[in-house]
Length: 485
Ligand code: NAD
Image (cartoon, rainbow, N blue to C red; front, top):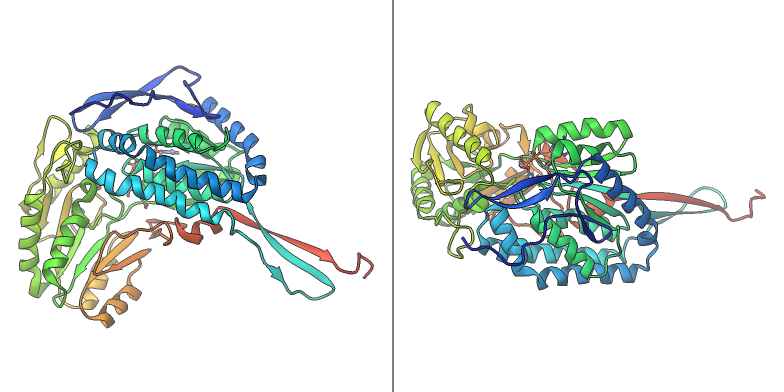
């Protein structure tokens, strides 16, 4: 695996400058493709978060008061700066997260730029309403920013998830303190530099690297932070919501998933089976919307299983920096062990391992794994694995598919494959899921709201939906008779 000559010195990003943590302490971050140390990140603590929030609070009034055309221009230029640094960003994402560089180039980087382009446009369109009321009164609302937004994100898509939180928050006139994932912070640090290059004033975005229970918790506890926007595990989300109550912060939570990918016998079975392979193994299955449960109508079950098994076997698994790689390593040795534990559970609970399941090294690799004969009560059918492990379950009728699909605590996304439009709409309406895809899977766009129900969280990202959650309405009443009435 090659190393990049321009690896960003790992530092906190405060007031558009690289600074060390006040304690001087650092944390190693690893390259999952080799298992070697890649860089040392500052171990940000409460005092670093205090500095970052103070800076964001100082910067916020001027950022909110800036001519909206200028705000729009800076965010658009941020998208251009991302594209100008595309290769360096893709390299970081591949080497630090372990995702195939071809995916980082084709998806993570351009979608990050698109997110800034899309939300740039909203900066000039966030207007209020005039409201007809009783009496000689002129009543109107204005949409105001919340203040400082604390953004906490996981390691699977650090660059894109950071952009999803930063771009709308800034478009609405908020400032942001970002706590990137300790496993993979390097792309976020370069993103911060891109924004500074685009003309973002100092303090409008600060980045504090460090551990969740230290830097992350300090951000959640800080009284100067108006809202926490969090993406990560369901247990962490619960803890954050509890801790945010102390300061009555708003929270939005994008949490885990166990998404069903449902194939009816009247579907284009080959297209569905091929798409199921990508849905399960894209980003090594380290994807909140991973199609980790493949539900197949019995009449086509064996046919689909055969195509899926063949597809999984054929995936090129290896060096994330090799452009031919389709599945990279898992993010850490601990995560590989955790995912390997689920493979062992699948074996022990009597599922039939059709493909893969063996780890290999150097680095933290697991062969893409397919289990058949999975029953709904098995651990691998219920819990989020967050790795390249697919469970295949048969069903008979639409009712059974609906019941099976909803038989987990999660409700993030679902896929339906059928040629029957009525069936597709009927099931889409039934599923308790934040997103439903029909004859496609894993489609995202900065314009389309995205988020979960049930234990997958609440709040929406993308589109106008997220701007509603990052602003508050102020209602102004003006007496038209000068106060004499
Ligand atoms: P995680 O919950 O362990 O960590 C996520 C972030 O929270 C990290 O930055 C971490 O440092 C921070 N954190 C941890 N403890 C904290 C605390 N006490 N206070 C404040 N911050 C804290 O999750 P992970 O292992 O990094 O990511 C995997 C999870 O993320 C999976 O469950 C996955 O489904 C979920 N995820 C969800 C979405 C979505 O959009 N719904 C997207 C990607 C990942």
